[in-house]
Picture 1 (cartoon, rainbow, N blue to C red):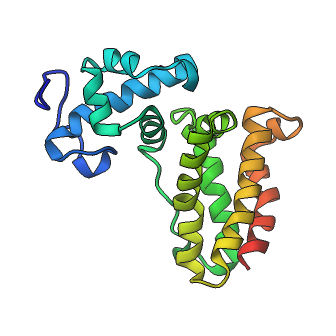
Picture 2 (spheres, rainbow, N blue to C red; picture 1 turned 135 degrees about the horizontal axis):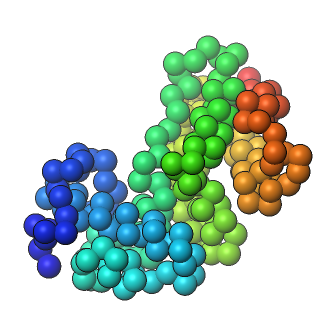
Length: 203
C-alpha cells in the first residue's frame, strides 16, 4: 500500500508532529497508525495488542506498521508520546521551577482528553523490560532535558533522577493504585504538596 492511501490525510498535520520514520508524505499514514495503536493498546493492553490488530484498525498492511515503527515497543512508545511537550523551566524564576514542573505533569494527568499516555506507559513498564527502557528515554526528554537546560551541568542528571522518583511515585499512587486520600485530593493541593520536594532537588 502506498503512502497516498485514501485512508490517510498527509496534509492534516505537519509531518514533524508525527513520530515514526518516513518523510512528509507518510505523515498521514503514520498518524492513522498511531491513532489506531492508541485505541488498540487501550482496549487490549500492551501484551494482548498485536501489530496485525493495529494495522487492521488503521486500514493498512502490517508490514507498513513495522516499516514506520520497527517493533511493537517502538509503536507503543510513539503512540503514547506523540503529543508530549516538555516544559521549559528556563522561562520561570528559579524559585518557581519546582511548582512549574509538577504542575506540567499533574495538569496532563488530570486532563480527561489526554487519558494519560505517561500513565499507560508507567503501567506497562512494570511488566515489560522493553517498555521500561522506552520509559527511561521519555523521562530523559521530559525531566532530565528541561532540568539540564535550566541548570546546566550542575548535577542535573542526579537531580533529574530524584525528581523522577517524586513524579513517578505520585503517578503510581494517585492514578494507578488510587491510594487515598491522595487519589481524591484536588489537583491544586497535590501540586502544592509535591512542588516543595521537587524544588528542593532543583535548588
